[in-house]
View (cartoon, rainbow, N blue to C red):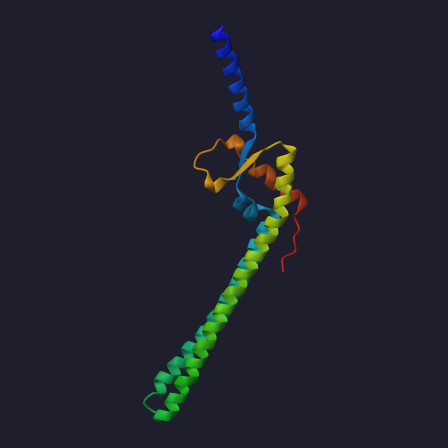
Amino acid sequence: MKFFLKIIIFFFLFLNFAEANNAIKFVDINYIVNNSISGKKLNLIIENKNKKIKDEITKLRKNLDEKKSKILTQKDILKKNELDNLIKDYEKEVKRFNEIRKKKTDEINSFNIKSKKKILDLLNPLITSYLKKESIQLLFQKDKIIFGDEDLDITKEILKIFNENYNKIKFE
């Protein structure tokens, strides 16, 4: 009788483990954000903005370097007060340059954060719906998992659904 009871308990424990295994999945959100159609478009936009800002900064830096060279070459020729005025003007321009560079960097970082948040805000209801439809009770972020069976990874499925629903997102 005890043996029969042990078999029944083992059977129910195994059945519950198999059922629980189907209720746990993981997803790589970063992969979806970066590899979705909209995410790839966003990465191109960010890359172009970064290039444009870098070109502007390089041009401003080149002008500053030319001014510095000019001041250094005239150092022995100019009177002390004229040289001091040129140095003050140069320092003001350097300060303005640093402010512009910081402002541009902040703008691109803000754009990047807002745009990726927009993708995540659109992705969240899709994942929630998918979890309900597939009766998934627990979802983990892939980068927090050390080991996991690839059968539990639903990243590609979520990516496909996201691309079908949101392949054209407007980023400001």
